[in-house]
Length: 194
Image 1: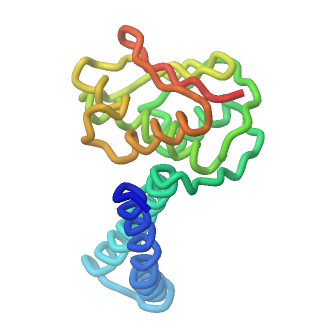
Image 2: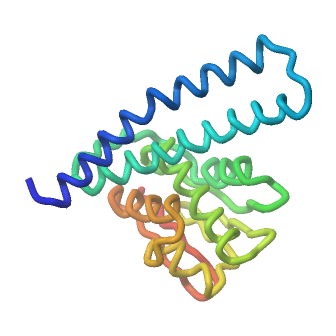
């Protein structure tokens, strides 16, 4: 086993082991939400804990996925999904006031949950690292075009400048599935496999 594979397996193991204490924190926070009448600001603190647990859970999903891809142990659960639905899911996650979606979708065969997270991560990276308040996602069959992409965000959304875990994982995921991610001028083009 080479060092790259060993490291990827260690990351997978760490992700697995971190889920137990994370589940404990989540369980107790949710119990407090349901069973205890908390006063301000304690009610807000518990709400923040629940939100942070969800965020940590998603980060662990991303780390686990990229570790499996890097170790060549990723076995995608392929399902047919419409590309317009993937774009709308990104808008739902990030806010329809920040992500405008238009166009016509097409069916693609992908690991739907992972690709949905990946598309959302790429759109979020364009927003965050581009300093933008809003982006447009045009759906053209199996291609999603995110505009604008700024010079400051282009290398991040391509996974070349490792400042955004979600974007870096999304690029590796899409390439592993036979898709591609490219920047063409001020447009990020997400090519989904057909």
